[in-house]
Image 1 (cartoon, rainbow, N blue to C red):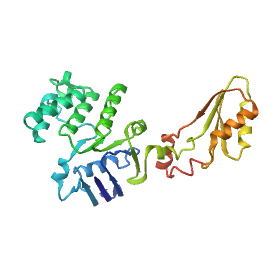
Image 2: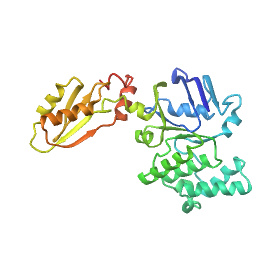
Image 3: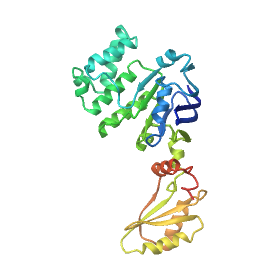
Length: 316
């Protein structure tokens, strides 16, 4: 387990991380979300031992990152922001060097190198100097070094940064596969990443932890969660439909969503779909589509990081 208790990191008068506490258990993929400058990368650098905390404690698989640093770091693989490496080395020599310093020898070393090279599609670039690689391939090399020793904990800072859509899909598939028996923490500002791979999400802003929930739990805070959109055949008076929807006590708001649609928003306790479909039937509206909306994580993220809690301000 990763156990973080009252972690604070200051740079002079600047507090980058402010009294943050959370745990992460095996099998969890934790998305660490926040705007630029929120404290995400600083937290990750403290967890991995690159920075010392100002106060508080970090324990990784039972090892204190300050008093038992080497034992803690042996359990971890780390992909830093920018995928730092030795740019003058070839991919083959760099991965061999990482294998050496991780203590991999003999058949185990060959097996692990073959595995990560295949998983990350690096066979064709093994003889190439790292500084000549595209940003996407440099990111893949960085991820390869992070998983080479098959660590129990993976700390990944923006793991799909610079990758094209196909490469992003491949990396997300790899993360989902690795998550079965590892702890994985992913720092990201890409919300689709959270929805694609994370079982839990923390939102941090100005160094403070503001939310800790499942992606679905965060989505449920959005006013769009459970909203019902009606799409009509041409010719209907959309403002009249909106007015009829607003007459129902279960409907908190209604908006003309497009040239042929209206969206009804429900009160938090209301089951809106039966109410709307009953009204459609009673009014005899010619409806081409009825769609129940999912919550919008981007809306919740904005509300939380701009000073709200993502609840009352979003979901009426």
